Image (cartoon, rainbow, N blue to C red; front, side, top):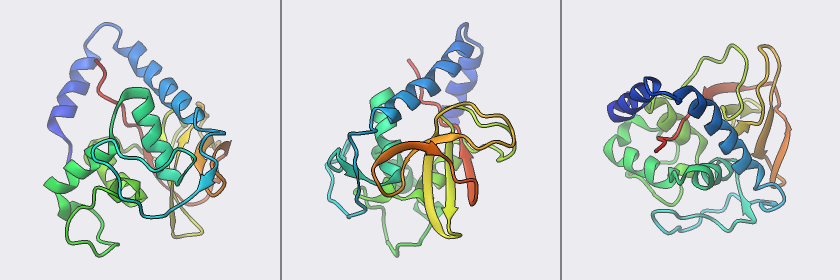
Length: 195
């Protein structure tokens, strides 16, 4: 289901002078915010943590793959995926995966789960076909080893058939490295509402 307000804002932005420039500038800002985590987020730590709400975060030196995405959107645009995902799950809980046996949303962890981010991004109309070249700022979701959910940010434009460098935390802190080409299940381009 597409968020009608976000769709109207996105479509109206296309008609504005300079919209094309804004569409190419925001992904670079997102990539820069993700790169800024390299050397700062040095640990992989999937522990459940009670977080402040809104704007909660685990300590900056640690986290998981989703934390790279969450921090990049906060730093680049002030977009709070914790609040956005929690609010959407509160409105449409049945649309989200039931893999964790929850009876209601949990604002401490829901935004830190890849399948929940995939659902949120799809509901926001951000899903793209897997075919074609990657653009910097695209979000890539995978099932590593066939089942382990993972998410990263494409760090550069890449032609069709090539795999992009990505920024992610796959076990040793935030890093930029070549994307593992196997197990790609999702591609998203989630532009923040600018202005």
